[in-house]
Amino acid sequence: MVMVYQYIGVLIGIIGIIFTLLRFREGKMSLGMLLVWNIIWILIIIISIFPRSTGEFASLTGVGRGLDLIFILGIIGCYYLIFKIYNMIENIEQEITHLVREIALQRENIESKKDEENKKIS
Amino acid sequence: MLIETDEKPDSYKLFPESDLQIWMIIPAYNEEKFVGKVLKDLFNLGLNLIVIDDGSRDNTYQIVLDIIKNHPGRGYIYQHPINRGLGATLKTGIEAALNKNADIMVTFDADGQHNPEDILPVCRPIIEGRADVVIGIRDFNEMPQHKKRSNQIMNLITRIFYNANVKDSQSGLRAFNNKAAKALDIESREYGVSSEIIREIKHKNLRMEEVPIETIYTDYSLSKGTNAKIGFKILVKMIREILK
Image (cartoon, rainbow over all chains, first blue to last red):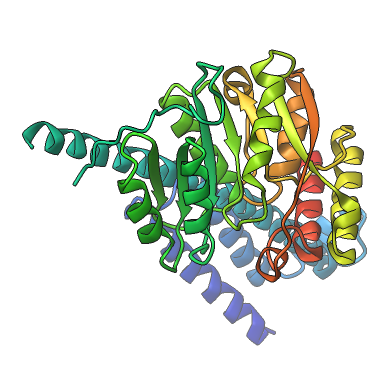
């Protein structure tokens, strides 16, 4: 018997793939991230169609039930993403600070030069 | 409009015996109440000033601009278009001062908590070639209780994480010579910068001296600076740095 969550899973997977492909086409996603995300979405589709398959993975890794394995992997994946995003934000903050400093230094330079020129004229 | 002045530039009044270029670095964030008085006092001592407005939302920039216009060649203001924190501001100031070929750079808070007369004692060890960095030490016994405690905790944290034992790790009045300023590698954007400077002094083997300074406590200056919340933030940052 096909359960409702299987339909939902497949649907989410397909939508996910479409979105990642679109983002890749717009140049907003790197090839590496495209691959990683598509693997995740395809796995979700496979697991939705063959829910039993998780049981085999689970027994391979020693985790009791298939669903548990998915949860564990999901949580690890989320943490990894949070870590990655955190680092990205930190880098962006640093870059912004660098830009702000450059802007401040250059603006002052321009002002000083203007003042000097005014001085020469007068 | 520029006005030619007969005043002798280059910190003449304060240090008549020295040819060294001394530049004050004054970070200012929403300091419209006191920055004007602080700048006037420092100009009257014949010092060169670099003010960095860290994206203030009040009138700080205009007030500073109006004052430095009357002291051509001796005062400059740099403006961060957006607020980036004390650490980022000090770094901008140091870079600007290095561009002006400063021999000695003195960081000085814009909230009026420092006594301008302390600048000479803080610079002296550098002028006499004994030190690369001088930290002005505030008297903890004169501090209000809550300030004293949070500063003591910051000293302890600085000692644990950076293995550097200093009497006042969060002081805003410090002096660097050219060599020290170039060596400092500051990454912290916010208040953690004070501890980071201590770390850098240790890592880069700079000669440091500590000189007692006076602190002028007003209701206003008390509301700023290191408090428990900022202390906690700095702690989290330091832990993170170790885990990196």
